[in-house]
Image (tube, rainbow, N blue to C red; front, side):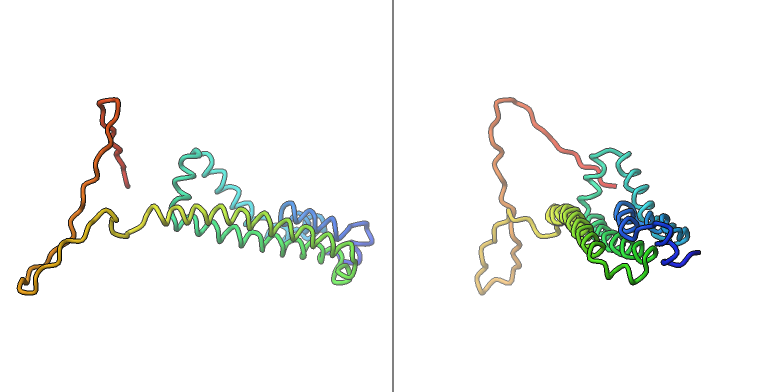
Length: 189
């Protein structure tokens, strides 16, 4: 394996290594000649892409249903954040592998890393917010709170020792022009 100064002398740019790792973690390390490091950075992202592709093959309805599960949506939001951190680490490591610590003294590299870091943070925060909105929706849908259509029962007199439970108030069904009834069947496995 060559030292960073040798790689830089052969015309390799730390900025290009950082940019390649910005596109896909591990590409900058591959460009620098650090094959083992490149594979280590690339494998987690490749696993996420394979899982995402398998989800998308199930159909968009299936994906939305899975995302409405609060546990799944929260897990995905956390993974999106972790992948963003992984990309940032890969970008810095790619530049360091090619140019060493001396490369970070260049204002052009620091400006490029800052711009790419802002792009990574912005995109991952936006995707994380989408996942968290599914989490919020799923949390509101799958709640265990009591039904809000109940009315409190009258309070018994002090002389009675009878427990009174709340009674559900029926909701009137609005009249329709058609004389049909729609019934929604839910199958839960």
